[in-house]
Image 1 (tube, rainbow, N blue to C red):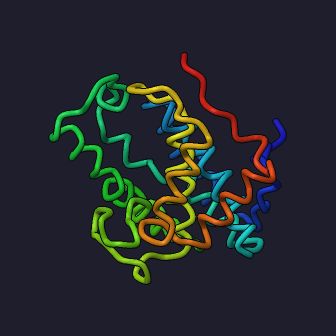
Image 2: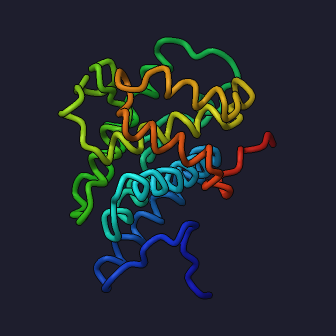
Length: 214
């Protein structure tokens, strides 16, 4: 069967080694889907939005591919979280939430020995860091956080708010954009927020569909 590449013309891999690395990431993403279908589809939509933002900022070619691939597995650490917790329809206990908060570090442990030519480990480990140091797992601040991670962080928040979750319905595009606007420059990178908002205002992300309840 002919290989199909994702939306928005993701740059194609070059050479056998790069193809093998991408196939490794695809296998990890498939593991996520088996464990929790929502996480897998969420990662794909975050990857598409991250790629669009990266292009809007000025990233090119192989760098865009790296951001896309990192976003595709950014929540891979959630395979260590029991599925019943991920799908729990009510408020989580403190212990359950702390378990979920470990997923960036758990994800990093899964991929730390893979030699990627892209900053995929940064994306997996740091996508919940925030500019003011209130994020996790390390409480990094503005300049300590890689740009690629700042991109995926905004895409992650927007897509999460737009999607139906086990514990609430979709909050919609407007509320998602209001959220990143409210925290523009404090939690989220200003340029990334501006580009993300521009993408939605100009309807450049038609493929990003809200997850329906099943």
